[in-house]
Length: 324
Ligand code: KG4
Ligand code: ZN
Image (cartoon, rainbow, N blue to C red):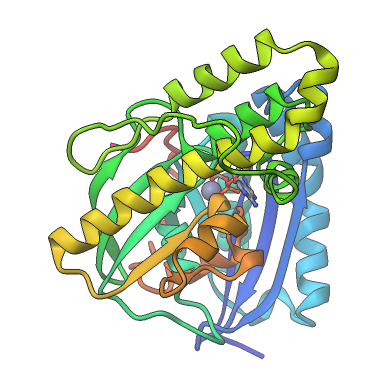
């Protein structure tokens, strides 16, 4: 085996490594989630995340090579998330990637995490070819992107406050679900009536999004309800709340597609795993379920379209916490 790209991703609370082949085939993909560790705090604690990445990065790498039945000598290039994300967490992955690349005299490709989410669509067995309009909805970002080629994109719109995944997580928390609550809220919503509580969908100009009002609306409803009544209405509240988020995402995306004359819509990021969102855009190219939430295969995928920095010029490369 040769010509492999080794990807590393540690921007938030997933320690992930992957091996991707020359044709974009996934040879190995290992994700170790720290969600359980952070759940008792109701969110990711940055310092705890960095320490855990430090413990997990070597075992995750070892498992990745075992899974792919590959050796470090089979790797041609190392790809790593440079940002945006939690600084301390990013630095663990970046340092590990630099060390590996330097020891093997390999080039290093620093990858933008958001480009990585888009590049989850470029992997085998069903790669999606640009041009397309992409909705990137995750725990940290909600973006509409004009993707004309595989090397990058143009930002058309973003959220003015909370990200869509954040709205799911905060709603889930108000409804007494664990962290991160998006997937659990999705499950609970299946048993509820989405018209039970008409939640407002914020209207903001252009292609931007806003979700903070929705969260406050749910907070007010939940606060007024006695415990037993809340329990009875939980599924209906989850379904209605999810409906409002999905409607906001879908309406904006379809409007942008129409205005741009985009023939194809794609959806990526953790929230792309949402069953109602997937059903609401039946003709869209949807990121494969295991590649929606953070992983390193998407980082290795993005690197295939970037110019890697040749050995040893990357030792001074720094991480960045936010885009732009
Ligand atoms: O892409 P991702 O793993 O991390 C970031 O880059 O932020 O996205 C994680 C987000 C979390 O907010 C999580 O609750 C949400 O994706 N999520 C979902 C579902 N699965 C994950 N939200 C709604 N429905 C789901 N099925
Ligand atoms: Zn992400």
